[in-house]
Amino acid sequence: MPNWITLTEAARQLGVQAQTVYAYASRGNIAVMPDPHDPRKSLYRAEDVASLCRKKQVGRKREALAAGTIFGAEPCIYSSITTFSKGRPYYRGRDSIRMAQTATLEDVATLLWNARADVSFEAADIPLQGEARGRQCAFMSLAAIAANGHSTMGRTDQALHVEAGRLVAVIAHAFGARCDERAPSTPQPVHERLARGWGQDHAGAELIRRAIVLVADHEITSSAFAARITASTGASLPGCLLTGLSTLSGPLHGDASGRVRAVFDDVGRLGAQHVVAHHLQSAIPIPGFGHHLYPDGDPRADALLDVLDPPAELASFIEKVVALTGLKPNIDVALATLAAQLKLPRDASFALFVTARSVGLLAHCIEQLRVGKVIRPRGRYTGPALEDTGAAANAEEGAKTPDAATLDKNRVFKSVAR
Image 1 (tube, helix red, strand yellow):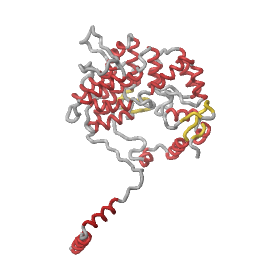
Image 2 (cartoon, helix red, strand yellow):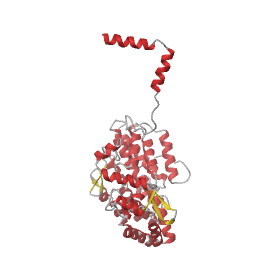
Image 3 (tube, one colour):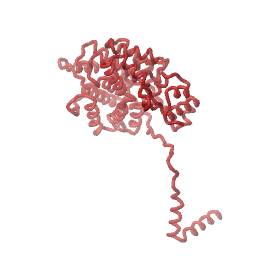
Image 4 (tube, one colour):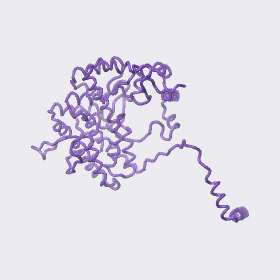
């Protein structure tokens, strides 16, 4: 079997259309490389295609998945935080898309953390690390707090909620959120502080509010799983959050909007028609379109894009991609579009995602604490055969003590006699 195959062959083996192959490649399920003989085309890793074919034959039943690996391809963790129904995410039973119309991130935190009192993200007197505000400041500041953090063991939910609120405030301020100095004692929702720091008016603040409510949580994502593993060990709350955000920072997870923003830059320089044609002719997946959990379209993206008025060239680009690929924009496109429309800082999409998802990650950490068990999966060893150290050790021991074998025989004889 060749190592790389054409788009036509990949589609034939999988029994799907070319657009579906693009979607598999955009999710990282199939590796892709330029065709050395025709730079306008791409080749697909044959081994990845064969693996997907096998999965389709086995089916997606959880029992079959569990038989394949220690957890199955889908780790199963019991949680009452977020679930999906009819193509929509629900926060503790409430429709998150509907909540985004009026709720604040503080409202969502109160709900997801099961807090008895309203949650607030008060600006704590914690010095930020670094001179410039942004991603580096956020991670450095959180790491500095985690270095001296207290274990979560033996602490009440109320105490954890207070600390969690301060951590979200630190993240937001590290990305540029700013309080209204004219009313320091008045509660200021985090979306207003972010808008103020980024020079936005009330309308811009409302768009930011809607966006961060929509991405506050998304069930057991890879970052939530990582954070829960850390929480299961009794690590500090900032340490748990740092684990989750580190996982979130990958371009295949929370930083996917950065890939979309790079494509938007190309659209601004070259035009929508040129960028779409280039990607399709080169069989390069366009980031930000399609989502494996939402085959009919990402409702979070719809809820945000419906209230946006992006530049005409970006709107044209999105329409062309949908028309030609059949794939609809996901939340990464929506966040990047919001940032482009409001002319936010370049890393603003990531900042919104990180600030909002901190609420969900902390909810998972607090829930995991009440399970009371360390998450410790087992590995399935696939390395070389183990050397027979037992036989060598016995031979060496016998050489040192000639009577050892005789003593063992006597012990066995007496045992049998009794």
